[in-house]
Image (cartoon, helix red, strand yellow):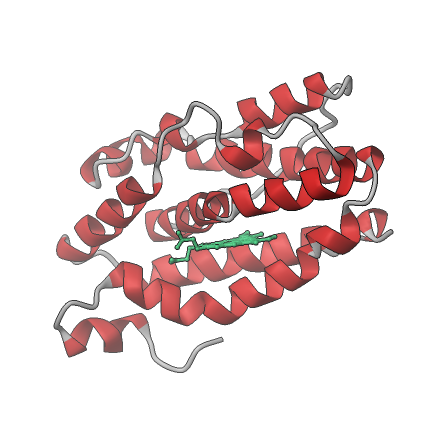
Length: 202
Ligand code: HEM
């Protein structure tokens, strides 16, 4: 997706850097996952919402386990990231418990082939939190008051600036921007596949 490469954007210089390049090059992926997620069409009952949270819990558990793997400890420090601060499975579990449902099993995700992929995945996961408040409003409009700590990011603070900062730092360290883009695209694609799973098509 997207026509220009991260390297080409970086070569243009100016104010555009890795965060801007990622945004531009994954914009169509965002449109796609938003359409596939189809929150208004998908969440019409409390049971639908439980299905959605359960599915996201499985996905986030698998991805967060790989993001938090000890092999990346040093690399996160080098880009100024406290990876534990970006993990949101606890909020998903709290919401599911509030809905009276034990969290189901996790998906097993393969290890990232390099740190750039892990950083691209973090970009997508933390970016997905940005639209969460809007999604929470859609859910409440459809089914009334339900626990939405995961969607609203209750108690987490705003973690997005830390991701943008990490991307710039990685760029300044001559990190492989195309690997970050590849990691972001594969994470978007994973969400698109996961959200389109038959058991969630109602
Ligand atoms: C389902 C409904 C969704 C809505 C309504 C939504 C909405 C939004 C909004 C409004 C923003 C911009 C926020 C801002 O700039 O402050 C945003 C950014 C973002 N969203 Fe979503 N989103 C949704 C789903 C997702 C999903 C499922 C993913 C990924 C799996 C995702 C990934 C991202 C990313 C990576 C960004 C950051 C883009 C950038 O500025 O670089 N979104 N979203």
